[in-house]
Amino acid sequence: MYHSQHPLAMRSHIEARLDAALMRKDPQALWQVAEIRDAIERQPQQHHLFVVLATSVAEVGRDHDYDWAIAEPSSMRSFIQLAGRILRHRQRDEYVPTSPNFYLLSHNVRALKGENVVFLRPGFESEHGFTLASHDLREILKPEDYQHISAAPRITEPPLDLKNLTLISLEHAALRLMLLGRATPRPTDKPAAVLWWKVALHWNGELQRRTPFRRSDPQQRYWLRLEDEGDDPVFMLQDDGPSGWKKTDEIRSVQQAMADGVSQWVEMDYTARYLQLAEEKQWELARVSDRFGEISISTRDNRAWCWHPWLGVFGEQS
Image (cartoon, rainbow, N blue to C red; front, side, top):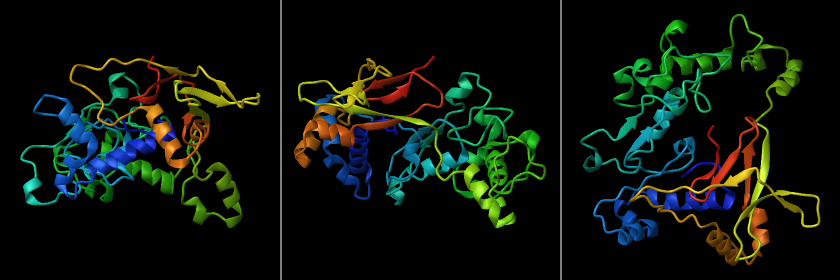
């Protein structure tokens, strides 16, 4: 499970192992990757699927090459970015698939729950901006928009019909609003980028106050700490007491049964990872925990949080 909500030590480990497995410029090198080789040798089956369950972090920042992908819809930009990581390093004719290797789900989880705004974080819908009349991908994209995915829909702006927005025209409308604003602004609109160069310079201070650089949601910092080799890792908060730490029940450890034939292929043993870092750096486990056990979690939705070594930290479903 590849996403941002792992303590730093484990996220770094996951990315390093994915980098090793998904650098496909030498296609034969895959069979020398320890995790791939060990998983195949452990299991008697002839056919194996190595799956990376990921959030949108898989779309940017890493030079990864996948054989195929299944995408939960959020935006056309997301589809384009993910498509760029399929057969990324293998461009020769011998690797061209004979059948589709990128599947787009017709609905995302929010749509299946019946929510009104579903293509957001990531996506371009918003409660005070633009929304779509349908959240069925089959109704808001034409076949030619997705049968051969390219960057063209992000470059060419389609005619704007606010009553019949598509996933593509939604993105262009939202970007135009962010950059140029409306002819008649609404109280809920954020300051448009055009104001930076259209209004008098002395207003820039007010624009900066209203749109701070890299503003993010309020977050709470936790540390997954391991002080002795025989202990289990425990989430803690910094404290003013003698030890400097206190346990927290705000992140609840959960058990998760896996289906037959499903196993992890990237080792997710936190104790082993902390011990490895302690040996590499010649540090005490407590210092490793302080430096590499941190995770920051959004407090925006006031959610209850769960943790599983394989899955990382995730919001409890209501």
